[in-house]
Length: 138
Image (cartoon, rainbow, N blue to C red; front, side, top):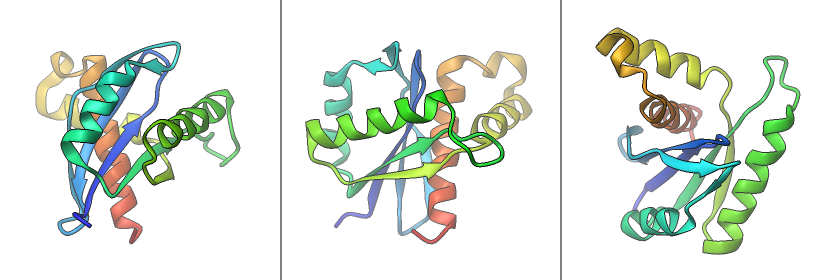
């Protein structure tokens, strides 16, 4: 096992992607994938998985602040199930509450409004999801 993990921040128009290492507990952003109503270019997903050969894929699970599910939660689960079905990768779902808020704040702090383009925010959110997963001891 390489200790490499890939995280996806699911969205209907853009899906953020990050790669991280278990040994260091850190992650870095990769590209954000354009999506059409939540469907990514599966060839681009396959390219990422082939390049990085992750031990597991973490998919952010969008929940309401009180922990209840929202319409996007079911769509993120469906995306995770399709990833597993198409590529046979191990999937873990991870609570992503506030990851986008945290990502936007961090990007703004380092680059102002220019840093807040959608793809950068989504991939920064994927980094936060993955690092949060590591912090919880997974």
